[in-house]
Every structure is written in structure tokens, then in C-alpha cells.
Length: 432
Image (cartoon, rainbow, N blue to C red; front, side, top):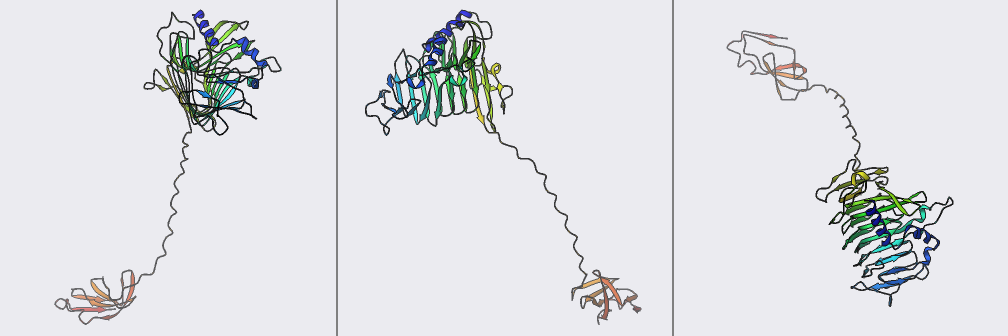
């Protein structure tokens, strides 16, 4: 098993045409001294005098006639700008875009890069020692991708491969593999001292066919002079989809924490003996670290249809190690989002009690009829009444005052027909 993995490591190093010792030896060369090769054409530019090129529909890179107002490719010694570029090569000894030093890749419009027989895009870091003699972390960046455009990159063994850190800040990046490898195949991978940092954008990485190990996203790290370099994949934003390719054979019995097979996202770390022989291989680190105010949801599984949220998803602020939850899955998906804040429930205000109404003095409606004590009264004014009819009794009492409709009214008169209904029974009338 160890021999087989060692062979894979060596194959990965050959992808970059260098071993760890030579990579770190490259630190003596200034980045600005390294031209960049695009579609087999070497471009040598600077901030003062950028190099320009156009591309045709067949993917050929052309420098004749290109200018600052007419270009698909621009190189200023640090940043390679692709603007609606189509780049196609069939080079077995170099990538479609390659630089033996770090560079920034800026995307404008829709861009296509394809190497039908080798790697799509490749970059190498320019490491340097710090005061303590260790490799300075800020010299390990190899490739930074930014811009608001898109990039479709295809390679035979790898879409994007770097010797050093790969940082994706923005843009839509799709990397895939078309070929079949006897060893390693990955859509996006960092080797030797490389970590992958995805800060934003939309990234889709698909591994190709392999008889050993295929991964959508892959990071290989190792120990150099006692210093751990690479082997980390960290996602802090954006949307990421990573899918492993088809495995045709595994080549024998597997053992240890690193298994051969198909993986959506994979990070491994190798300890070395005297910076040369790999003596131990273990898992690297895969983590998510959402920026303030965001969260990241993670799904993993055999494919997109069966993938499920991993334990703890979605993850909020802080650094979360998800290595064990995703390392053995063929499919991986993450997406940063802004959680909807729940509005605090404010208790409904109780309505203020209505002030008691001031009672109004009772009055009579002139002309209205009221009944009291068997007699019927007609209101002559607001507080006086006239007897309209008396009760049908033998003895009838007509008071001097009577309370009707809540009003104590004065009886001021007796209607001439008041006794008409009571004549047959009436024998006595009491007034007052």
C-alpha cells in the first residue's frame, strides 16, 4: 500500500515537473523574472508595458494585432486577465496556461481553457525563508483566481494544478478532467506545499477516470524540515461542488487512513524522511470557516441525489473541521448563505382602558309616551308630563310627580280622554 501511494505522490510531483527540493530552490528566482505561457505562446509583460494577445474560435493564441483596445489575453507581469478567451492546446509537456512562479488570474466575460493531453492551468509558488529559517507562509501562494467572469478549464489528468496555495476569491470556475489516469486524477488540486482556500464565487470540480484515486478537489501536503506545508482545504464562502470520477480498478488491498478510490473532496499529508522518502501518510484537514454574518451548509454522499447534510450543518462562525464527515464521500457540496434573522417577538400592547363616560342627565322626549303605575303619560317637556290614560281599575291614583325614563317628571295636566277606558270600573280617583 505504501509503495502504491508513494508512486502516486511521485506522479503528482511529475505533474509539476519538479520535486520538493527543486520547488523550494526556485525561491531564489524573482516572480517578475518568469514569463507566462498561454496556449504555447510565451508572454513577457510588465505593469508599464503589458503583453496582449487575442484568441480565435479554434483556441489559438495570437499576439499580432493585439493591443490594449483589442485583446482576449493580457499579461502585466503579475496578473493574467482573460476576457472572453478561448485557449486550446495539445501539449504533453506543459499546461495550456503555465508559469513557474505565482500569478493572479482575473476573469472577465466567458473563458475556456482546454489541454487535451495534459494539465489545463498550472502555477508554482515562490517560497522564501523567514528569519527563523522556516518557509514564510506568505510566500507559498501560487495561484489566485478573481474577477466576475467565468472559466471552464479542462485537462487530461488535471484541470488546475498548483505547487503552492490556490486561492479562489470570486468568479465562476468549472474544472474537469477528460482522460483516464493509471494514478491520480483531479479537477482542482494543490501539490507539495499547497492548500486550497475558497473565499467566494461558484466552484465546480470533477475528477476523471482513474485506476487509483480520483477527486474533485485535492490537496497534498508534506513535512519539510519539520514544518508542515499544505494538505488543507478551507472554505469560507461561495458555493462549491466537487465530484470524484470513475474508478476502474483499485490495484490491491487497502489499509490505513488513506484509501484509494473516488472522492469529492480529499486532503492528505505525508511525513518525509530527510525531506525525500515518504514514511507516513495521513488525512489532511478539510474545514469550513464562515465569515461574520454568514453560515455554510454542507452536503455529502454518493451522488447529488442521495447527498445529505452532514452533522452540524449549517455551520456558523468559527472554524469547523469536517474532514471525517466528508473525506470518504464521492460527492460534496457547500454553500454559504446569510441566515434570516428572526425578529424578536414584541408583546402586543394592551389597549388602554376607556375612560368611563360622564353620565348625562336623563331627559324626556317631547311628545313621547311613557308608562308608570298602570297610567300612560305623554311628555309635555323635558321634565313635565300629561296623563294620557289611566289604569283600568276601580281606584285610580294620579300622582303629582312620576318617574318615567329615569326622569322625575311633574304631572301638570290630565288629558280629557284619560278616563275613557276606565269608566266602567272606575269608582274613585285620588290626585296628589
